[in-house]
Image (cartoon, rainbow, N blue to C red):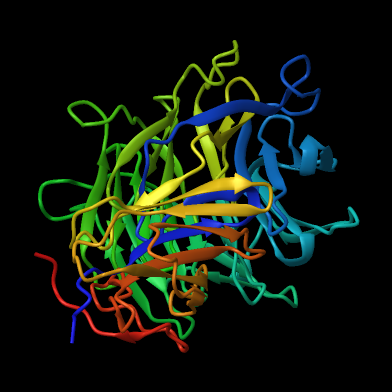
Length: 472
């Protein structure tokens, strides 16, 4: 019996927009094309009532949502750049947060003395106040800073006083004592299990609360307890694996907290830091797990890949065409990998489109060789290329495809490439990931390791029996 000694190569792809990225991401060198997509009157795509943007979001249809503090307005930027003003209510507070709900519903809110509010904006344009000045149990809204919507339709609002929840039936409750101490809540996020994550600015802490009400402290001012402190927690985000991410706007850094409680500083900025990140105020995570963070005082934004690679994706020069980035605040990313950044002091929102349309990943790092690379072949097909197996007995390769997000859903796409280290396939209709494994006509190699280090499960209909050995 000849053992197949190479494990699978892995890459994932978002079908929409043809951005290729990775299941265990290690991108090729990537740069972004920057363009302004909305601005104040006379600038970019100008609107008279778009002054001091604070937050951005992306809905399920890929529309960009943006709200502005001074003008108290909100806009939707849709396909082909079509801009629609969706919010301009008389007496509205200064808007600080915006979030996408299901079915095209938008939630937007802000603060003003004694009149903090959160609004629901329906797709037909109807506007309803869902929190007005006071949350549940007589607790004031007080200084709204962030909004999030969970999978069951609950709206979560972080304010300077407490975390508030608006149930689908409109009932408002306030989580005043569950997160303790949590002074000046600053950010809120939810994961696929509807667990709620909260950052607390003044107490330099972050928590999570599961649906049964269990609250866990994720991080405090000691940071990673290895000398990297966490000061003035400004925002929180969570990825599909349950990793939480927080920013310290005084300590100028970003931490990752794994589900097992391990804490890692993944970006160190400020004086004496490795990167020019000052006053990080907002962060977000894409569907793969790459983290994006803005620096308010440094007027820039960074991307942190899951392998730890840190890249500055926009700096204070903005689009390089006379529109600088000044005080970067809100940041969002869509499923095609486009990043959106709010430039607060000069009233822009920038769109950063990846200009390198290919990603690659080694086969779990256990073997040498050329990684799997995906490129666009033509309008309807993709080309996959990879390096040769390290075993001379391997004579061909198998290609599998799965649904992105369910990394055990792969089924055979091509069982025998005819000995070629390449394949041309039809562009999938759905967001996908690919696995390539060598074979020797009798057996095929491993499908590679998952992120937790265990073997990726076999396909329900494998091309060949899986038997593999180690590379020399």
